[in-house]
Amino acid sequence: MDNSYVSIKNWSDEDRPREKLLNKGIAYLSDAELLTILIGTGTKNKSALDLANEIIKLVKGNLHELGRLSVKQLMQIKGIGLAKAITIAAALEMGRRRQLSEALIKPQLMNSRHCFEVLQPLMGDLLQEAFYVLFLNHNNRLMHAKKISNGSSTATVVDVKLILKEALDANANTLVISHNHPSGNLQPSEADKVLTNKIKEAAALLEMRLVDHIIIAGTSYFSFADEGLL
Image (tube, rainbow, N blue to C red):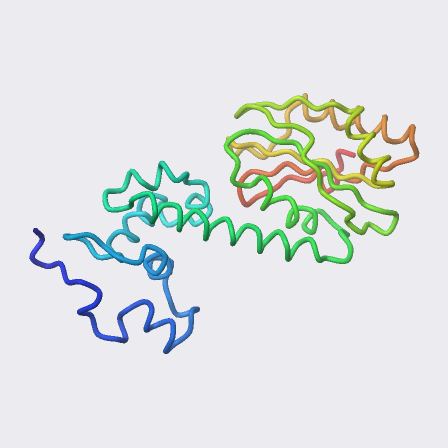
């Protein structure tokens, strides 16, 4: 046993994460301390904070990467069992859903950043490609977001007819298409450019506007509209 190990219950009140949250406020807690509260208890040789620091170290301090860890990956850390891993995964999913709900209450999506804020929680953490469409009315108000297809880690297949059918069913006249690049590379491929033009031309035949194609890679994005590619 590590003789330097001291259980959190034996720490001073000002150092315990839960008491620190109550006395100073949640903003004063570090990422590891917040994770400690989720973990709850440590092991015979490690405190909950020790376990939290191991997780933070595993993702190199990147909370985005933490959000991508599966329950199985979390359980690879000795001392993180199924219950603890599920608690962490559930908390991270709640954070994603909060981010999405905040984005969805925007009255209008007026630029690429607004669109990214809706789309990032949906696909920013995915390990395979997915293709989404935002359906907007004539005032650029978001009507709904729809996943059109899933793919592999490098590609996805998109049915243009399905996109237009969904748009007609939603009575939408403005579209924003989006897919993710799990590799982290933001640059559009030639296939991305060809697909964009194909959807734009097909939409125009039905008097609909394709106003942007957003490529998402983690917490960054590329906008066809911003780069003059539409």
